[in-house]
Length: 259
Image (cartoon, rainbow, N blue to C red):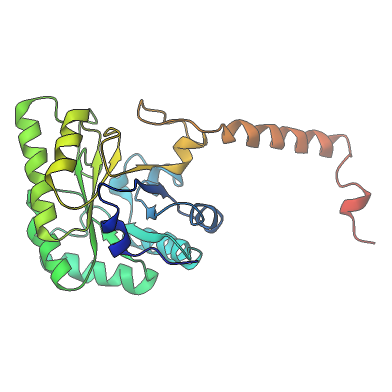
């Protein structure tokens, strides 16, 4: 099994679509690792696993805990870990926290949200040998308005410029979230590094979704999510059958008992 490298991801620009999903645990990582180019240990784990109201509540210790687990059980995919809110507010703080995450998780790269405003921080980290994935468009860590981005000319200009600045700063890929289709297309055609879309059209170089959303385990189903299964329903049915069997003393049965 050949390990996917940053060089491989870069080579897929305009050639082969990049596949990416989130993972936060051992069992999910082992499955996703068989198929996806990139596994993102996203700070979305705050809401998905812990019931937090936003990603702003996620701490670096949680990202390290889950990042370490996912990396340990991922042999093929490129593992990227989100830097949580306010852990990269300056070059010095960003470098300290980035080193801490990489040292403890052994991940392949880190992801930062922001455009021109963090370009110098990205540039600094890359010069220090830390691979970076950017994130533009809708920014969950700082956005108060979770709406489609790029609908007016000012937004379009800013987001496109953000993409250019992050690319120039040395990021090897950029997540483009919730922007109008023609803007995602323009960004992808303008910058030389791969774009990975989430709610950003088929024109991106790759796609990412939160796994819990696409398998029907969460209650979050925006327009850009395709529901590939209904795992929540399957789990519920299994729990109901188990409870019924216990109540009727049908479980444990002979084959489930040590003698």
